[in-house]
Image (cartoon, rainbow, N blue to C red; front, side, top):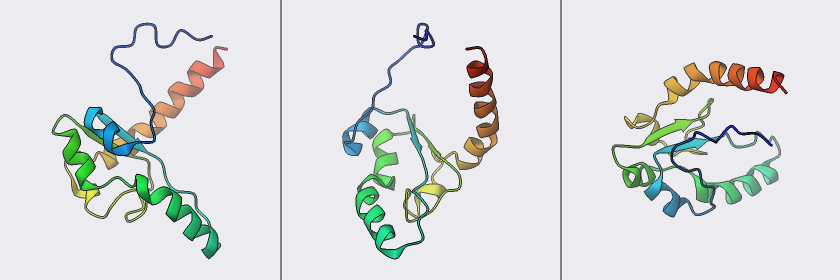
Length: 113
């Protein structure tokens, strides 16, 4: 058992209710949709994932305190709506800049076990 969170401040929660989650969130972090070639599979993925697409209403609900970190590559119209990436809360380029450092930190921590 790891003690990574023993000095943590705040809380982490996981939910399927996007509307409720964004009202309390300071940070939204997304991942890319699966990349599928088959058209039937694409439609199936879209029907399951589209209700969780980050839209401007979600960033507005977070307020100015919010930060949105989409995982590159950002696919507008899929995991995010078209206008979201232009919001000042969207830190797309900053997220990409930090990705390598986060991955290195995870590998460093994992190598200690």
